[in-house]
Length: 138
Image (cartoon, rainbow, N blue to C red; front, side):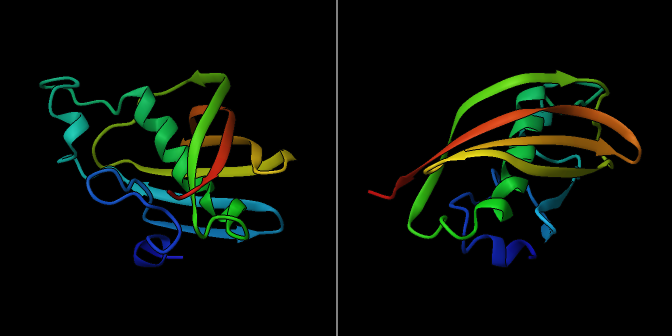
């Protein structure tokens, strides 16, 4: 899926839409986001040496997980219910293309437990277990 099709499933819009494309293959989703350098979260983090904040890396990973939940996403909103064992290993900077891979490790109704990792080229930048709860749109 490309960005415009992703908008059919995720409620995020610019400047918070942080996934450019996502594919699903054999239970594993792969998504990408190119850090352009003009994003709002880089403006003050840090002047002269912009680095993507860890919380934004978690959001990039989370949005790239959307393909894992396509069958239940329509009509629902996805909220973080937890982040377990998240670790940050390397910086992400302007010009980097973040590649996220993720897979469901458990599901209880509309709660999903997903292992995800974000890489730039071959370097792991962030990884952890993301827990999502889907709720009906009001």
